[in-house]
Figure 1 (tube, rainbow, N blue to C red):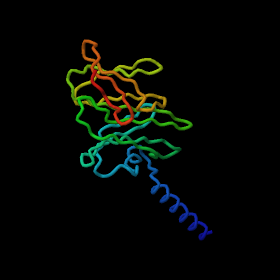
Figure 2 (tube, rainbow, N blue to C red):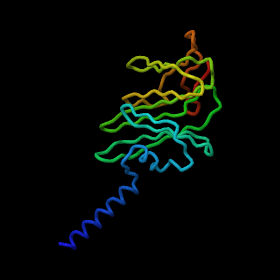
Figure 3 (cartoon, rainbow, N blue to C red):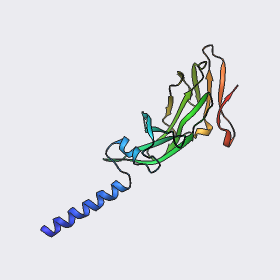
Figure 4 (tube, helix red, strand yellow):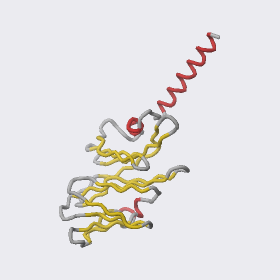
Length: 181
């Protein structure tokens, strides 16, 4: 009986070590940090937990923002995916974005940063209606949707306080960004 207990204990330790190496953690933030693309140099700048869990990191050395999605399993969390966006000098920047689609979860995150003080609000046009948010200079804002929408297919417009359109989001493959109107 004692041999059997030792064998079970060794098996459980190997099993636990395997899950740890694979990135399974007991908190969502720990799972995000365990993502293979997140390094010790990455600084956490955003945590978005609406219907799905996303984290936003920035890395000044690599000059990029990284969006990480975390899924909850039965008792643990795991990060299966991440995306990155390079720094930009544009007055309105997309600093995070990701779309995920699993059997039991669909979600989209879209994170913006404005350096333009004339921008008052952003409207994202969806098939379910428009979603509008006020924006403040140098303060990230985000839109999170409970469906999968590729970031390059998002239709969004930035407006001034008088309702005049200033920027529109879109473009062709390599130039998908905010364009001045």
